[in-house]
Length: 532
Image 1: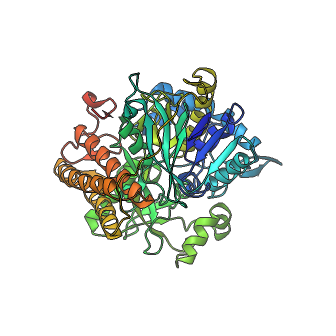
Image 2: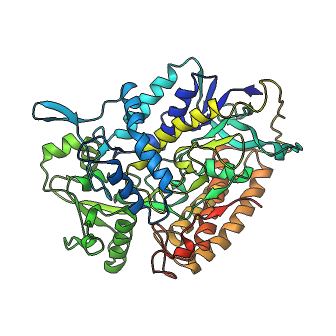
Image 3: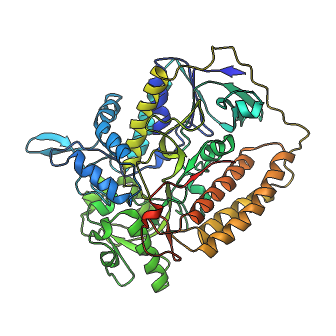
């Protein structure tokens, strides 16, 4: 058994920010199932939404966030993140991150972008590689700390709780079992302050902008441990994923529309303008539904994002990664529209937490995309997620250090080793791959942008059978990363479906043909689920 003052599972913006701050107060382990740089954060293109301009205000940012959230945001959470954001951005810049600037009347100032749902330019960015630059900046700072141990290629299996061990005390989190992917052994890691920062669950869908690591691990582990889960029906589909057989997960940043890009159908018509006054810069739920409806109406496989009014020089300077990627696939975005389709992008629900990251299970905190603070409501405002990660990571560290001391002295609790039992190596990997594929396809077909009760019920019935098969497989065979991810995917898929079935209205990202009238006040509340 290894023991740490703090254990962080996940190495994105939220987890790394917390770890850097917590390392000033004790020993920190960062557990990440791939390399440290492999995170949802590294894939973020657009930037960080934050009030930094005199033409903007906290009130406007708060209003835009509440409007995008379709009546389900927690106003206190929105105000906290928006108002505490500038200080957290300042700290990030002090670590060495340089956001893009521009010349204005002989002096330099931040070059702010605009994205869907924003009334002002307020998105700080580093070209179209903002997330990658943030990730590498934070990872460099974490690796320089002598109090941080980065455990790469380690995947968390399950949380260890007092209830699971049969302790006759109030249930609380005591640690975590972790699979060392290189040796194949399971390690026992002990802490009184465990923090989940595992990101989202995009890979539960067939088409997603997320990296392969986004398998909902944190939500699934927290659910199995008994923590309350909230609002999992609200899965955001990004409107513009590149439609190309060799680039199925490549995101075309919303910042392209912020610089004047227009979504058009095959006839060249600005069809989104018919759905919302802001047209292509409407909130993401509106734009994604408009694209879905247009594709179904016309039978087209995609729609087109047209930014040909901008010069090649501007596009190469502002969007170098997107420009080069499109060109590599035979698309010159300066001369022709980019073919795009919606794809699963962001999990607006997650483990229910307060504004300090505390969950319903003592000893367990959650921050970033895996958590549900109430900021995003029924639909996330573009580029608010990275800001939330910074703010809540800071607050979680402050709370754990100053208000929640360790429940047990170091060395006073001994946890049992992992018991594999009489298991054998997986004999037929095809079973895992087949179930993985089936889950992702049924979620795409039945639990997508537009839903019906009948589709959801079909998905629920099939998922019940799949989960039984997977659980049997889990108990009878030696665990692997593929098997653990499949188990987590099945759990999160079921949580999404159960949450969607319980919301008998259309609101934000949850749009159902059975209740097409948006927003019934009876359902102006969180969807809460917990085991038992």
